[in-house]
Length: 250
Image (cartoon, rainbow, N blue to C red):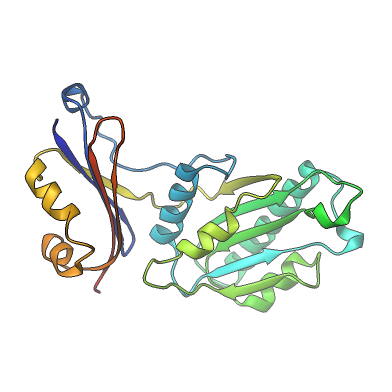
């Protein structure tokens, strides 16, 4: 079986997936498109959706940008999901207007709405609220423009070695409810590059035995710092799967 190396570039962050494929998969024509697209609206309760969200945040935002957690007070609580979606869109329109008047760059955003059907048991109720990752601006202005909940909070993003993975996992956590997202059209998409000839089965076996020796992977991918990796063996085809995370040095 051929070995495929897939590299996903999301801003300063690189993910490498190394795994076996069939001859048929190798022969299939690859389209010209080499970007990962994120659906405009999707349940955020599956692993692939979380990957897309994390990569999109890493590709488009920095510590100069904002994570805004928008809540409602009792008098502004929307009666249903549709009203909540309108509230977010109206908020984003007002932010765009403010940015234009103040000479700021066009708004980039990813907005996630979390909600659960109301129940009588307040302990299990999830009030409708929103998480908005957005271009940087005055945080007090963001909270003022929202104006529907005194506990709403705008914070500067803060990356760690894995970028904004913790934030993405937080806003994409899977409660017993639902989440929906929307995004601006001006987001950059992560770049994917595929190579079916870089690794032999022997090399993959050697890499799987390295126990996360960062020097090995940093030599293979110069200019990047090793941050994490995972090795799995498929029970069905006995294939070795290697997943590596890295961060660009500058």
